[in-house]
Structures are given as C-alpha cells and as structure tokens.
Length: 407
Ligand SMILES: C[S@@+](CC[C@H](N)C(=O)[O-])C[C@H]1O[C@@H](n2cnc3c(N)ncnc32)[C@H](O)[C@@H]1O
Image (cartoon, rainbow, N blue to C red; front, side, top):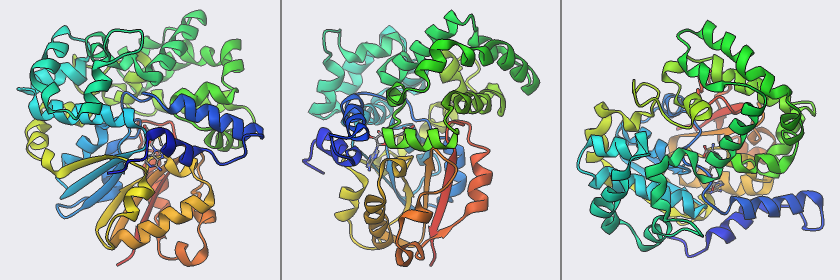
C-alpha cells in the first residue's frame, strides 16, 4: 500500500537525535543493522494477547506483523479481519511465505515440516512445487536470492531458527555458554518447575558471570540483534540501575523457570533454537494439527502491507478498526510520534476498541507522553495488564499494557 521503502520507514521510526550526538549515531547504526532479516519468529505470547484482546467474530484488527506467527495464532479464534503491517520488508517476506505455505502446501504434515521442523530437504522442493507461484515478486526475490550464499529458501532445509540476525545472535550466546561450560539444553529435559530451577542455577546462572557476557551485555549495540534500539536500551539500563546483565539474568530466570518447559516454546527457542517437534506441546498454536483447518479456511481474512502503523492508519476511515497490537513499538517512539499515533487510534478506533503493547520497562509511556485531552479518551487496565505480564511465556519484557477506548 505504501511506496515508501523499508529503509526510509526505519529511518523515520528510529532516527530521533542528531547524527552529531552519541545517541543519534547509535540510532543510525541500529537502523542500518535492523534493515535486514532479524526475527525468524515473534517473541510475544499470543495466549496473553488473546486474553487481553477479547476478540469476537466482529473484531477488526491492526497488528504489527514481525515474524507473522501471531497473525495466525489470532486467526484461530476467527476475528472478522486482520491487517498486518511492518516497516521491515524482510519480516513481511517471512509472513507472506507463512501465509502462502499454509494456503498452498497440501497438508498439515508438509506445513509442519516447513515451520515446525524447518530443517527438511523436501521443504525446498515443496517451496518450488507448491508455494513459489503464489508469491509476489519481491517476496520471491528475497527467498530465492542470497548474498554470497545459496538461496535463502535453503534456510528451511537447515533450520530457519538458526538463521536471521536473531538466530545468529542466539548461536553466539550458545558459543559463550560452551566457553562458560554451561549446558543450557539440559533444562529442556526437566520434568518439574523445581528441576527447571535447579538446572538453571547449575547450568545457566554461571553464564551471566562470564567476563564476555558482563562486557558484551552492557554494550548497547550487542542487543541490536534482539531488535532493541538505543532508546529502548536506555529504558532497560535505567530500570537495571546500570547493571544490565543482572536484568538479563532475572528475565532469563523468568523465561526458563516460571512456566513449565513442556509447553514454553519461547524457552525451547532460546535454549535449543527449535520447537519440541517430538511432543508437539512446545510449539505455537498455529502449528498444531487441531488448528490447521480453521486457519487454512480463514486465510482470506488477512491482509499484509509493508508500511508503518501511522501511515496505514492515516489512510483509514474513522471508526473502522477495534483491536490494535503495537508490539513494543512504543519504546521506539518519542512522545510527539506516540501522540500522533494515538490520535489516529482515537479517530480510527471504534467504541470499545482494545489496544495492547509491550515495553522494556514496567511503566507505560502513554501515561506521560500523551497530552491530557488525548489521554482521557483511553482507559488503562493497569491491574489486569500487570497480572497478564506475569503469564507471558516470552518473559523478556518489563511491561505489558492494555488500554481501551470506552463506548
Ligand atoms: C517492534 S519489533 C520488536 C520485537 C517484537 N517483540 C517481536 O517479537 O517481533 C517488531 C517489529 O515491529 C516493527 N515496527 C516497529 N515500529 C513499527 C511501526 N511504527 N510500524 C510498523 N512496524 C513497526 C519492526 O520492523 C519489527 O519487525
């Protein structure tokens, strides 16, 4: 829908300070680094989102796409319409591949081979046989191209979850874990939360004491591959009281010990860069066989655009959407941009609109960023937000926030 390039969209989203300042320079480095294929799956728990969103068969959603998993996880409950936008074109290429694979692969097994196992030679054959002809040219060019490498579609014969900048970064962390003699994969075998806790203390906690982790963990560009821009890094640094490694240790403990490992697919990805395809509990709902028909039959309810939230909203009529999923994009925005976005949400949002987002720190930036007249149009469901944050299996955020626009 937008002719603006991803590079331009990213610059608009991230460059907030002058190039001559340290922060401005880091923002430019981030936008160059982030202008690539970063996430191979989304890191936000759809179970929590679905509880907060209260979707009905009438709901019309706008969500940032990222890796595209949650569009399908939401589609399971059959809202009327889902619009997915992302200013990162590469994430949209993954999303469009996911949607086309679901629509055109012959059965659940071949779909699960593609995104569940994600490492089978036949995935590449199936791409050419069933999917390729249904993709737009840019999406094809991405998957069939590759710089000094074989075609990117081969990621699906070698485990896509080890690729993309996020996958490379986790591999780098696993490399340090080996140096620290930590065997993080032991935790995947735990049978109880107590065992998870004991294995964490024995195998993973020492990793955070390794000098490389202490050194790298406090560098702002080290977390670019997690999609954390300089401004979000600053919020986290402030919250950690200056020692980010301690904050990472606490969040890792939540990720690995607060929820049963048997169905926490986020923890499986962090520890093993794969889903639990043997037991198929620690896999996203969109890959479960019981959801396959409903997803496949409702794909016509989804549309995708490479654009920013605000550019998309500006082109929409008033009162036309009623659910908004902003991921952690509020951490990327200065108050003036947040205000412009929420003005659009107030205009486009129908009565009873619900809005969710995550933040690096516990506090909601909306409470201080919006002018009072705009802020009064929304109600903050703070107690429920705090409760649901505790249930978020992705466990990496400091805050989850729910707002609604009253009828
Ligand atoms: C905000 S990031 C953060 C990570 C997120 N928790 C995840 O798991 O993907 C996710 C995606 O949001 C996109 N994004 C950020 N700000 C945006 C905006 N204003 N409009 C559209 N997409 C945006 C980025 O391009 C990226 O693909």
